Amino acid sequence: MRGRVSAILPAGSPVRDADNEIDAAGRIMLPGLFDMHAHLDRWDGGLHLAAGITTVRDMGNDNANLQEMIDEIDAGQLLAPRVVPCDFLEGESPFASRGGFVISTLQEAKDAVDWYAERSYPQLKIYNSFPRELLREVVAYAHARGMRVSRHVPAFMRAQEVVEQGFDEIQHVNQVLLNFFVTPSTDTGTLERFYLVAEKTAGFDFDSPPVKDFLALLKSHHTVRRVHLAAGARALCAGRAHTRAGAAGATVNAAKYTRTLHERGSIAVGKLADLVLVEGDPTRDLTDLRKVALVVTRGRMILPAEVHAALGIRPFVASAPAVKRRSAKS
Image 1 (tube, one colour):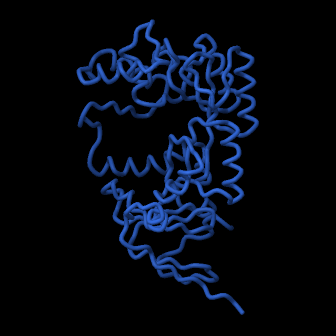
Image 2 (cartoon, helix red, strand yellow; image 1 turned 135 degrees about the horizontal axis):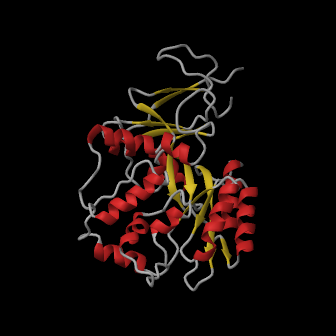
Image 3 (cartoon, one colour; image 1 turned 90 degrees about the vertical axis):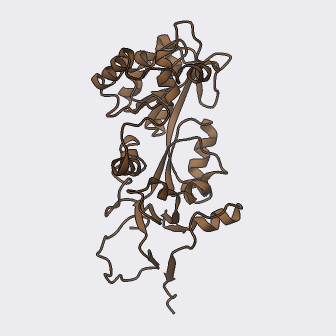
């Protein structure tokens, strides 16, 4: 099974006809990591892989350019992780982002959703200038086409409203915090979506009734399993539980949310052999995820130290694992 896990054996078991034997030397093997919010270009794929990221969820790109990159990656012409594309849908305004479809009518929005669905995009991302009067119907239509729906909160709306209209995700914590700071006349299509959060968050009471009501709304709509709102050093979890959750968030939980768990997110027979060797133990210290010694993906070995050295970056690990290559048969 080229590029997939064909067997998992106890340490020291004999292996027949292996092209390469990698001495992990006590390092920990993880399934390939996910970047859950990327905007991929042709220059950063190698850096993603060197960091152990074998899948990116692209949360908005130029449609034609992304399609070309996906084809080049699949053909082995572009060094980059596997891509889970997210369709980008925007409304017309002076502040509109124009990488995806910019629409004005309900039919245009449905046509755009159809275009993405026909190309197997699993998720729709609605952006700042999207017409709020079309939101509920477009969310329902995307769900009917089998898509998750996420977004920035449309201008002149609050996070509470988009949750009530069916959003599965909200991108960026500022979009959530604006729920408590905007008025009906606040245009969050402008930089006000950053200014308000910067000005008001430090003095905000995260135990206030509006926050509790909003969390109750999320729970009632099953939008999230856990919400983590933090100010400064405040955290809802710590220690070993936090690091285990962090490692899981970059692997198995990410695979669940991208609907790729059947082939990614864990190491199992038949799944993609997207594998990462790290020094240390990221279940005890999450920063050990930076110490990537070797990456396997698409049947190839990538040594991050070589990628970093070529770019003038000091490697995060002292030495690469020893690899014993099988001698060519006569």
